Length: 158
Image 1 (cartoon, one colour):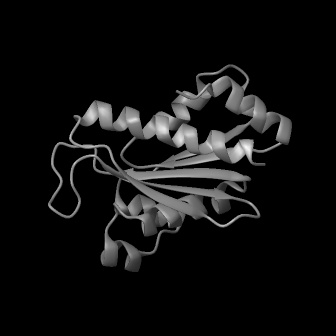
Image 2 (cartoon, rainbow, N blue to C red; image 1 turned 180 degrees about the vertical axis):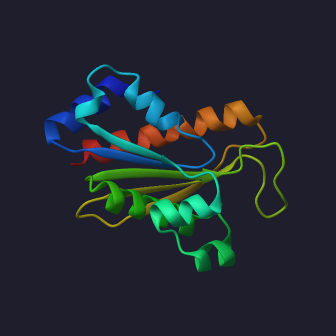
């Protein structure tokens, strides 16, 4: 589990501001960050873009990408992270899009979550984790924890 206070302290020391772009977690990462007093000097904003329209309107995710690969894809996670970085004009952004459940399909099963991490001066990275059919709450919590881990790793390399 990530020490969120330490994550924020690292960002503060490096003068790095953070934004989140969340779909299936519905703002959980932003909540985890802002639960810590003093986070306002590090956390700029969180985008909750649950619908495809919101992803396009708020983050500039391409309708063509959404049509071609669907919302739960590394391509969309990439565009979400880049969009959050650009819209918030911060140095670090994390994105999450996935299928918390119940449901899913043969090609995109319950528990599949795609992440994006964008940082000024670095290439945006993406990854997909299949958490499995743990149930909606556990998939969302696991995705939130992983996004915090991605932020902590990025800050430890800055």
